[in-house]
Length: 417
Image 1 (cartoon, helix red, strand yellow):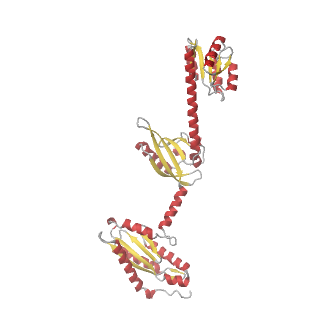
Image 2 (cartoon, one colour):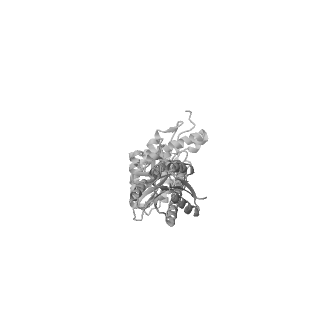
Image 3 (cartoon, helix red, strand yellow):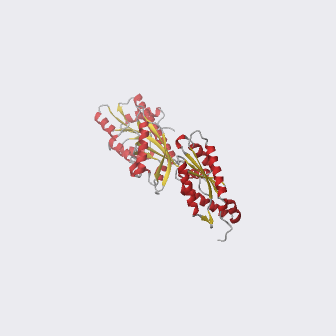
């Protein structure tokens, strides 16, 4: 498709010369002999470029230029003014208005073609860049992850639609604004600190931030921050992206919980116990004590009162063990009616006191009028060379001894209550 040029020239000789030169190079030529005709043709035909004489019979070329640039339909059309060589003042005025270029009279074929080609190339490049930017904008606005740019640790430049939607605001309110306008003081302080580290360190970073969304809900975001470093080694801005991982994190936490917890009692399970045993069995945790626990009479309770009653008994035992131990201690259901407690940095004397606390608590506890009874055995690793398996065996053996000692003291579950 031919590129269309509008020649605005009242002098017939110059007009015919321009028309001949330009048509010989394959351009489609439109002609206007005055300013008003030029405005009408430009509005209807939308030429790719306009050659505009400054001196016209009705209105000046400068006035035509101003009106072209004031209209949405024609403001994008590049304009080359044609003027006499001696009109320096006019050149300056035209450039100040935003003219694309000037061609001097009398015309030289090579100069005319070169200047027109240059402007058409610039226009094509500008359109290509604009299309690219628009495509990128559309892409960024239609992807789920949030994307934004930081001018400095606290100043936003641009954001995509997902970012704006997260905070339930329009994109425009975020441009060239400070984070303090929409983040809480705590969120701002954390975000500012991490942004500063990326600006100063000039390296890509990944963080997890908790932000309050536009509905007032705390959300966990996985954030990636990439510094844009120029040739001088300076960080011009940060390119940031984020994904809301709140739901995924909840699922992961739920899976982790189920992996390492007993579903009935909520205590840690055997898998977690074995992992923690390996982690805690180090010199810095000495003396390291253990308590082996076994619920007395659970099988009889299950047989006589049913498994629901037996389950409630297990839950009550778990509650007692939690109450008697510290937060740093690991209380786990080993399996069935067996429990085990790991107590790092706990002496022989301390573990005996904890055992006594368990025994005191269970004296006043019952399930369906069945008193809680737990057999207990304790042991302590005091030297690094001792094997933790041997310590566990000692605690377990003492638990079985205690179970035998208390066999005659167990309550009659057949009692009428």
